[in-house]
Length: 228
Image 1 (cartoon, one colour):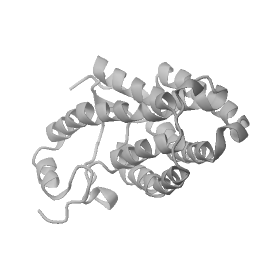
Image 2: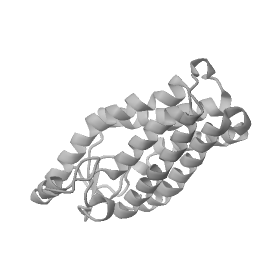
Image 3: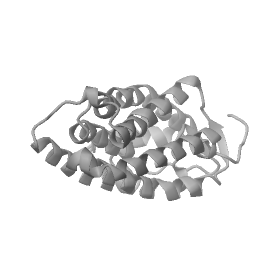
Image 4: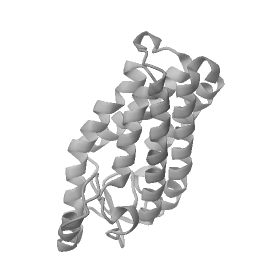
């Protein structure tokens, strides 16, 4: 176990700086809503809702006492890639249009599909944070008095928050039709899923032992498992 620390990854200077950049780009993107079209408006609205859901948890959980934190180069790279492709690049395009050379066009129904996907995405994102409570962290961390949550949406799915993000990732190229600002998030999140999730589950296995193993039997990774 790593030495105890009273500040989690969410309170680091890098997180504060990158969030400030994101907020600035968000403001510029909102000002260009006419040029960006309806898909961008849906994406911006969903982003604002996700920020509204996550921010209170981020601020509250800064007070967590972290007893084990896995902060290696791969973890930092995965988080940076997700922040870049899921927030910075889309906002950069919507704020300035500088990536317009990589635009593509889909049928109008793609925007409708992307908008509809926001409903399960945002519900799962909200419910996952609500069920995890003080146990949520943006990084691979174990807090003091960490709990194994097996209620609510976690009763049958081990990673409902990742499921919500998968839905968001699938919707983004439909709403922001640009190979860089819209599509790149898909390989970035796929890398996070296949590299980070096994590490996260290894941490949970080490922390909770047989309780975690029993939970894995009755709960699927992304989809509900109704029978053991």
